[in-house]
Every structure is written in C-alpha cells, then in structure tokens.
Amino acid sequence: MDYEMLGKRIRDERLLLRLTIEQLAEMVNKSTNYIGQIERNDGKPSLETVVDIANALGTTVDSLLADSLDKYRDDKLVQEIETFLYPMDEYGKQFILDVIKRYSYYHKKRLEDHAE
Image (cartoon, rainbow, N blue to C red; front, side, top):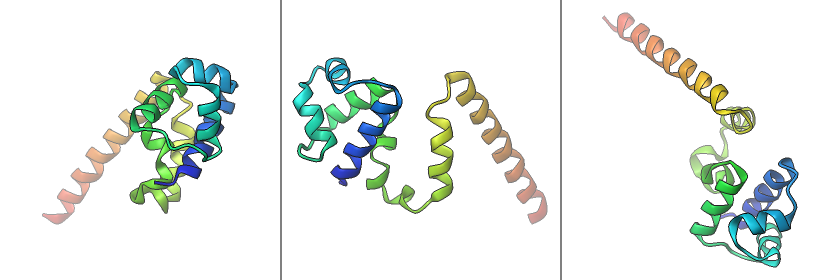
C-alpha cells in the first residue's frame, strides 16, 4: 500500500473541505497527532480508520487508495473523471450514472446488431 499517497490524498481532501486536522480528528474520534502522522506518512492507519476518514471526508476508500489499486493507477481518464465526480452532489452523481447506463445499454445493443 502506498501510505505516502494515502496521506497526501487525505490531506488534499481535508483541505478541499477546509477542515483543520483538529476537525477531522474529532470527526473520526482520533487524536490530531495521529491524523497528522497519517498525512505525513509517519503512521499507518488500519482499514477501519481509513473507512472512517473516507466517510468523514465524503469520499470513498477507493479514491483514497487509488494509488495502491493497480487497475486505476495508469488510467488517466478514470482519474480525470474522478476529479469531477467526487465533489458532485447526489443528484449530479445519479444523473451521470444514468448517462453511463444508457450509453452502455445502447453501445452493447449496437455491437450486438453489428454481430448479426
């Protein structure tokens, strides 16, 4: 696991939300010192702590661990899409999901029609 990038992503998300280390620490019931250690790569959080931090930041564990997940590491398009998706409200995310589902359905249908 890339703990350095995990800490950087946590810090970036926290700053994006304009939260202090103290505020994030309070939200996840951890000490400010421990959150600082995680962000500086001086501490290795448990999976439970990573989940708690992701929930507090309104993001996903996948997003925080993206640098440790091989399938997303080199996919620049997925990374760019993520930057737009995560800050969206639920309505926007649902809209994008509907568009993707429709595209997938019609694209699959078109491929099937051409195969016949």
